[in-house]
Image 1 (cartoon, rainbow, N blue to C red):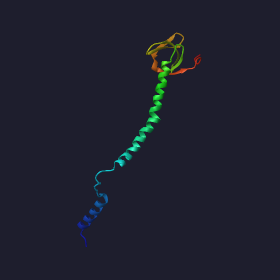
Image 2 (tube, rainbow, N blue to C red; image 1 turned 90 degrees about the vertical axis):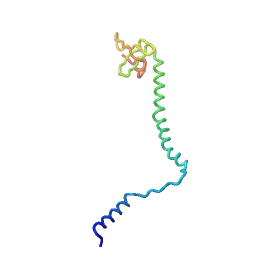
Image 3 (cartoon, helix red, strand yellow; image 1 turned 45 degrees about the vertical axis):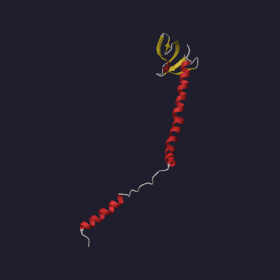
Image 4 (cartoon, rainbow, N blue to C red; image 1 turned 30 degrees about the horizontal axis):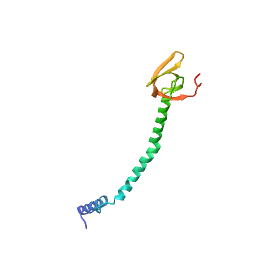
Length: 122
């Protein structure tokens, strides 16, 4: 018959074997193709990210820049703050926008969000 100490020792050995797995050494000179294959999902994620997010954003920036450069006196615009008005003065970095009769504000060209079709205001 086993003593209490021997039974406890046997139980400890069994639980240790369950929780600790054996570690084996790997073969020397790993395969380079397996490391390239493991990088493939990461590369594919960046390609998808480029076509889904970066490229459309660059296209929008280019269109916005072309719209701002094409502003002319008399264009009806919408600003980033939601103001509607007509372009009354044009400078290099700033424009004058007439919001109402006798009310004119100066703002940066980059604040223009949209050019409205002629006759949209009033």
